[in-house]
Image 1 (cartoon, rainbow, N blue to C red):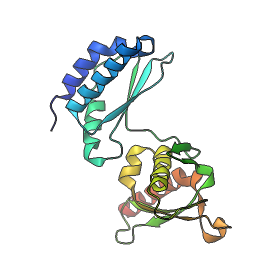
Image 2 (image 1 turned 120 degrees about the vertical axis):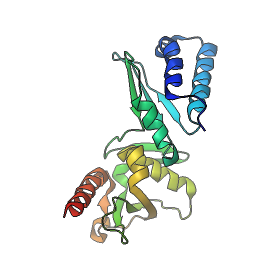
Image 3 (image 1 turned 90 degrees about the vertical axis):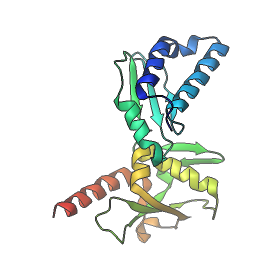
Amino acid sequence: MKKITVKEFWDWFMTKTEFLMDIDNLPEQEKDELLEEFDNVLATYSEGITYELGELTSNGRKITFSAEGDEEYFDDVIELCTDIPILDFWDIVAFKQAQGGKVRIRFEDYVLNSKDLWFIPLENSEDELSEKFGLKIALKDYKEEDEDQLIAVYSLIEAMIGEYDSATLLEYFELCPLPNNPEEEDFIPLTQLPEFIDWHLDKIENLQED
């Protein structure tokens, strides 16, 4: 249950905005205390939200608020990032954003590059009007029942298409070894996943209109 309102969170933020903007120049102890306070205040609004403070640029700083893919807290993120006061030089972003088809991520012992993976879409056989879909993803060095590898691939997908779409559209995915000739077995380069999603959503929209 929320302990403070959106307004109360932003009221607190307004008192700290100059310090957060200049956080790189704060003494280490003050920096740590400020970030710990940020964590605690945000948790009193919603325990399921995290944030990432961007680098300082000529345009200011960006803060990305995330539910870490947990749909239970999506409304909290949306509410927090909708009812925003006027904040000069701050860019407030809801959810981790899509980076596109060419992405490289590191998770635990895995380093994955989207150009090295392939996929086959698995459509919802029970509801042809559902926007949700599944993926069968082929990769080199596939390891059966390796949870870290599974999380690494999901993290790659999330980075490619964004946190919101990953959670709301991707219903299921499975991994498999990469065939010698993936194209001959109807696999598609994973770099084309964003284009597939656009095509898929357009198709569903057309079906719903018919």
